[in-house]
Length: 208
Image (tube, rainbow, N blue to C red; front, side):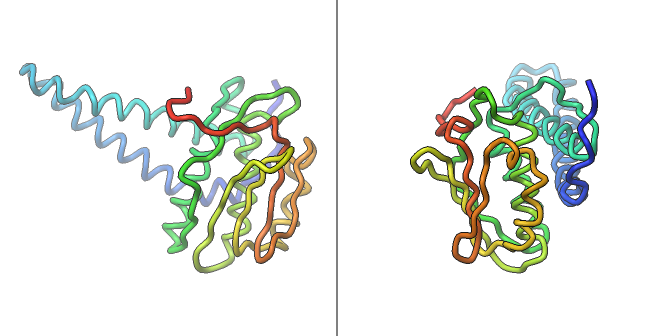
């Protein structure tokens, strides 16, 4: 399988420090759990179970994000792996990175998940596209931003307030989603990204 082209090096450079911080936190938790598991008392071992499950979920998410950044630099570590909740995972990482630069990106309480419908981009490609568009639209500005997601007629609409519209328009034509049917429009002081309705579905709690 051929590797994807180098696409979003600026995004990878921006997100990696925050991701490394998350991985360090998970590693520290595992070090603590290792010490707990050396204690033979049943009550101590029982307390370690939920923390180990939390570390497992965190490591799975962090592995996806590492693979996503590697893909943006031309190496596809994810291969056939798809992540239906990848949009939420990726945009929360973008928001965390912006917060480290004293900016705030407000996200919806629940973001839609991906359907993997015929004709839609792979989840990694779509997540990278949207993350790059949001990042490039906010990186050069100060203040607070807000992203919303709504189903409107035959499209899903993602709206970003106070976006750098010129940078977004410059970024958009090279994105995979643009070649698959997505459209970018000016929307007041920000932009509106329209995605074919079949690509996304309303998030349901407990979604696998």
